[in-house]
Length: 135
Image (cartoon, rainbow, N blue to C red):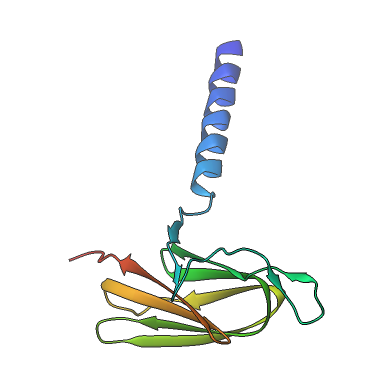
């Protein structure tokens, strides 16, 4: 009886561990973005009242079927363009100091894509790959 109980307990623990590992989020790859004419992180600027204004921080992550975009220290609209060999996807994010958006990649063919995030007059660009699965 004790042996059966230990085997049952061990099987329950193994199934719980395997379920928790399979339920974890897929890995995400950070897309290296560069600002046209500079870097993605800058020094503090001075606004028209004389107080400091932080430069916008833009980050993008590639998960299997989506691109997650994070924008900080910015107010206004953010245009997101994903340009590939034969396809273009566009989306718009409204940002109030901090914003988060998701661009769907389903249906895009395998290949190298360029992401362009436009905040007013500032443009951030980076590249990422969509791998081919199957065949």
